[in-house]
Image: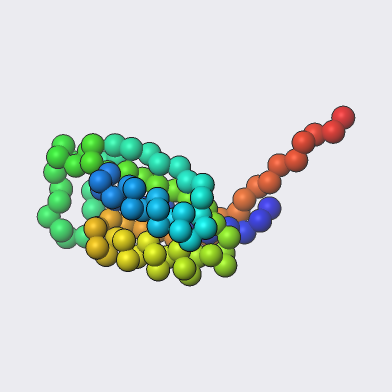
Length: 102
């Protein structure tokens, strides 16, 4: 198993292209995008109408090597500060598999 950083981003669908470009710019090429997500905010921002936002949000999950997280988090922070959204970074372990030889 290899240590990696997990990056989870929840943002408006309109900003998806900017976020993916930002991740790619930092060397993070692979990610998963789940569209049409809904939830409630822990911030007191007054946005509690799930019916209005349900189809507007995306959930992006990506993994990177620990040494890339400093630059990646700065790029992501700049995008989210300008356009909104949330980002969570945590430790994870990548399980590498090998072919079974019989």
